[in-house]
Image (cartoon, rainbow, N blue to C red; front, side, top):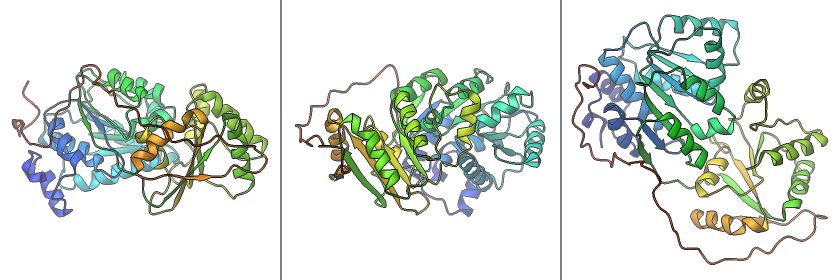
Length: 401
């Protein structure tokens, strides 16, 4: 489906023409009409699928059509990291090239006082679009620099990554400042229970758009250790003592294990930081200051819940044409779960021998595949089947309701 088949306004279409954007990606085809029609949207799609344009284009089109206050923040886009906020801001400049009446400001930490002053000026002048990281936005809210009471659009991008980084409390504080009438869009690469719970609290009767999970990039070197739970810390110690490991992120499903791993690494004089729900706000802010976009190695201390979560986790490495390594620890109780992931990948992941002195490993026994027994949950509905079957909105402004 082509962009010109939608009812994005002419200024947006002109910018897309200049950028040689003709055909929509699947996530754009299914989300853009829904957002234009005023629905809250829950999108489940990986990085690289075109999701930024899927929410930016319909929002910018509506803002350019008019009918929104000139002295207010009309759209807030939340990003987990400074780097993603900068990417969204760059996309905003391209898509908004012909939108003379639509302004934006990017708000994120890690900058000097001049940057803060620029942010403050943009917010006080009433930038239409505010692109922000949660910590920085909370800082502005605390000192009264920001009023979100007339905001019309709220976007939460990479929601699962937000929760991984401990932003849940910040997100809810920000959402509490929004009017109930605000249209809300949420994107996540995975849909674990905690993300669905967040969606229930944030979104009103959302349209759910979910794309099939792509397989990991070939440049990620995947391997696994089959081991007993008590052997996992020993493997970590071996890996760090016998290799020049830098830019490593270790995932675990339990905060007590995160604490144990951190203690072990600090005992080995490894520079590390932990992130979990027990941390104070100040400690979380310190950890968030670490650049996590240049990860070389991903260690899964526990097998991820499903293939979707596995792909998302190891996708933190091998970005920007770099190589990456993903290592998963598979305990005896997790063997079947990991075999389900291998089934999705369409191949067996290399099994590394245990380091000398750690004892014998469990046998990696092939198990019969269980029959699937799934059902739909709650009252979620999925619209946007790729067909442009919506009645056009009034092109002169907001929906008539």
